[in-house]
Length: 393
Image 1: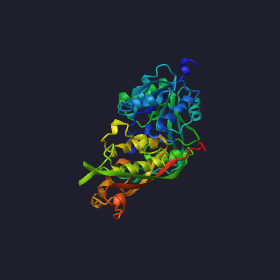
Image 2 (image 1 turned 60 degrees about the vertical axis):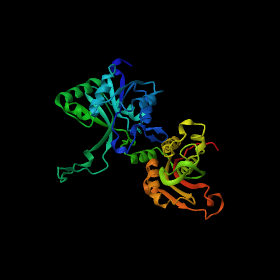
Image 3 (image 1 turned 60 degrees about the horizontal axis):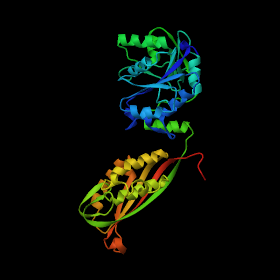
Image 4 (image 1 turned 90 degrees about the horizontal axis):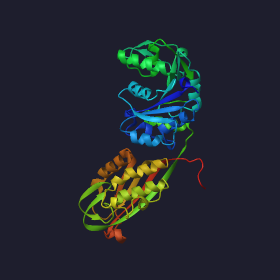
């Protein structure tokens, strides 16, 4: 392939992910892999593409760099800018030896190598190509008051996405002209159109959604054929009372009460919930992950363990849906503190408060618990777990 015919790809991964409710959408789990890895793999597998530049944010640079390991077409990571155009410009500066440039949103993970090749094949002098397809909804043109002004014929409308592929020289001119004119557009095709150049829509014939919110991940997994099952985990824990220690249950310090013996803060309620979560995910028990041999957890808050538990669950495609726990204690009286416990646990688990239940009862004076020697908790956790197609039997 001659230098003029080399095809370089710019994969944009520098967005703000404002609508994801926390976390970066490019690093979110999609069927067991980060969203960005799906886009990277498609361009890596496309024979038409020779070079890849990934544009990322400064905050995620290390995580994205680690993700790019193993993709030998990735030449460099560059830091993006405030606007999409700034990020594309940074990518263009890093692609100096290509004749054709394909720009792709890393948050469109379902693009295939074949679809990319189809777009590249249609590029020629003076003609750019954008991935797209027929509009399925009726589109209305409205004014600033939401008053409908026109209804374009749906047959003339196309919903466009990425990749968008252009001769490198054409795309550079388009960005330079927009910069001089102070124009900001939502895609590269609009900038090329301003030059009077032709751009055609190539129907990739397959779903190519953009991930912008958590619900989009669910849709994308369904399109990938991912299926889930519901599992239940059970956790039971006991701790003895000990003097000169605060009593912590569900992340809440209960005043005027003797504390419990244990390696961490001995939060027996949180410990039972952790065991239930790990059990539902098939990940053993709390001792396997936060054992007494690990000094970092000595005296530590058990609530602080929950983010680590969620990470381990995510690694196996599991996420908690609800938790129900019963505390068995003769003393102290816990009912006044139950709502605070529910709130702490819900926040740490990323669940709505209605999905977390805490009940308190006594042992009616029977046995060690009835004699007030300690506290026990029984917990049940319901999890949504990705079904693995081929598991060891």
